[in-house]
Amino acid sequence: MNKKTKWIVYGALALIAVLLIVIFSKNIWNWFENVLVEVLIYAIVFAAGWLLGRYGGRRVSRDEQNVRNMTEAQR
Image (cartoon, rainbow, N blue to C red; front, side, top):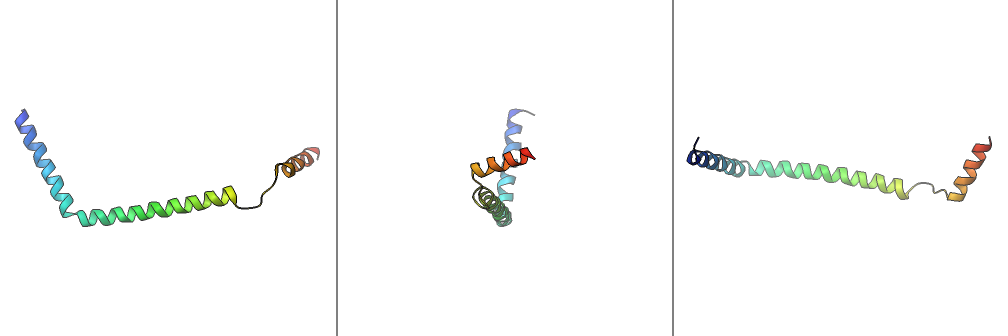
């Protein structure tokens, strides 16, 4: 293939790609919205779990933890 033929092939492929995007733009957009919503749901659930694990639950001070470790070590 010479240079002119490559330009024609690449131009035809670009034209076909643009036409397919225009024809299926509604479907592509719906798919993108569904994926975006799913990713956002996963991100919210992950953030909620991380925040609960980080800041929620029963807090034990370092002194209480040290006392607990010493009593367990003495047993």
